[in-house]
Length: 208
Image 1 (cartoon, rainbow, N blue to C red):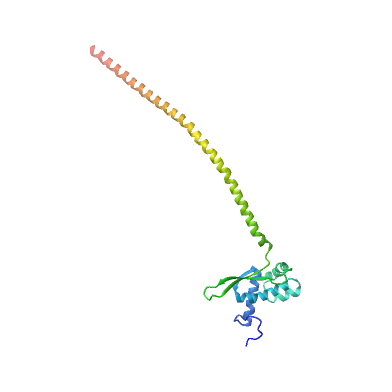
Image 2: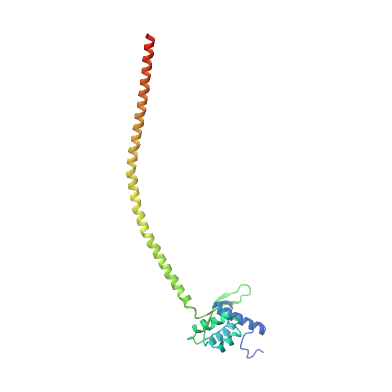
């Protein structure tokens, strides 16, 4: 009988289960948010919250105690310098579990295990993004409005200039045509004069 067993063995041996707890706790402290099964999240949460409680007090003893399980020195330093002080005023409940549905294949319950207290930068980031988006939209609108007015003003000016230029162009074209007609008439008169002189000369020669 499984009496007085206060933890989930997760169908693993003791050594495998210990490695799983250490690795998942390290990943949780590194990324502050991991996706896993519900059973593993419930088991790892106990280990992680005990470590965070110890990390509230930065002492050599606590560092050595947690250092037995957290082998990564960077994550160990982060736990005592960032995560521990961040949860200094919180009396437990440092993590939360969010359900995200079933896993394809075996339909296991999948959850997100994350830290409740987040960085101040992450909290401010959404507000800053919204403010930037609002400013950009206002700037774009402000740029578009004067452009439309200037385009509307410039269009009538262009049409007026085109209308004023059209009569001048037509007058110039008429003048050019008149000059061409006059030139052709002068050429024709010159040709006729030459023909008359030639006929007169030929008549005089015949009379002689």
